[in-house]
Length: 103
Figure (cartoon, rainbow, N blue to C red):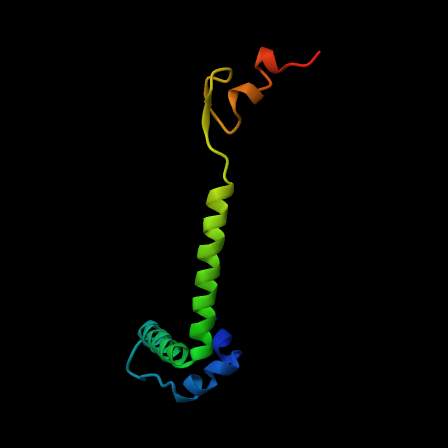
């Protein structure tokens, strides 16, 4: 499955054309060797492609920015004496609060 996926990726064709296996090694050992070589090759390819580096940096910056916004929007957890536990609502807004009931 791994080699099939790699063979369908045009960016990996150069690596695929240069990969070789050892006849005296077992199938598992060859697969382990080929996979390790692929990971190293992809690392070199990605580090040499500055567009991918910029995109990755942009994605990280965007994720960090969104993370900060989520933290600000989160409701604080407060103790509600009517539920006798921590909740996301304030005690004065609790439906169990007799003072908050409208007649």
